[in-house]
Length: 323
Image (cartoon, rainbow, N blue to C red; front, side, top):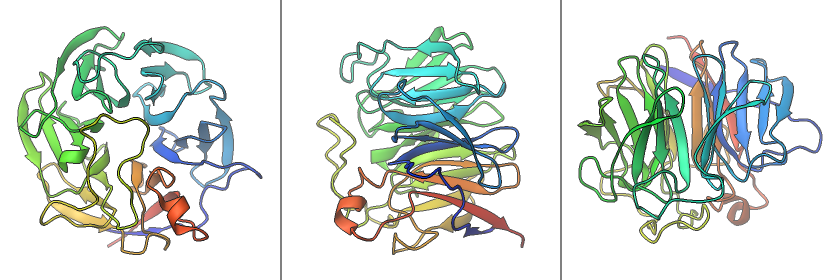
């Protein structure tokens, strides 16, 4: 597989800014939804990059994860609101999971303390939530938002997490967790039982699984201009240095692989200001044609301050090339 960046895709209205495009999702019509930390948190583009609409103004404390459910509803994870909320595509609130005014005890195991993302099982409609910055846990809920089970604790052993940053499910119902600071993806069955892990990754931020069960994984890398993690008041254990584990690539990138971890493509290079390269790819999603979209957290990664006046893209589309 080969991909090339589509420069200039997705033009915002005059005076608008993503600030940070924390996550992205694509609906059944191939409209592209960008959850961001600007004044207009939910921004929708057509497949051609034309701006369609926005909503969410005044509703979001801090944008983190977006997900489109099988029914087309929009799921937003707001880590400082400590909630996962389901909306209609027009922005009408349908369901809230979590207490927006009370975080659970730090690493206490109960939901939620700065959750990061959600995934909807295509087989059952069950909801999986990665929790997150202030917890080391995965929670499973039924389609009505009622709790079913939880698993995980701080650590490096199988089934433990050091910032479960994103979560995804495949067609068989398996659960993939981006265990970011352990630089691995862990794979579980629907009961939360550990199956295996992939350790060839470098700080995985996000996972998207398409309808062919191909995985698109955004990896954060360890560029030498990056500061220590600075995404708000993180727990004390998240004081990761900028040096990668032995054998891991220092480059922020996207890896495309199958469920057996066979790698088909890796996108990204050394110079983060060049099209096709990244600073801190935080969110990823692919459309029905196999093109994918990447949103980045260029402020929290230190790039805006340290690289001025140069400015990385912050949000990019990649077109899949035949052959």
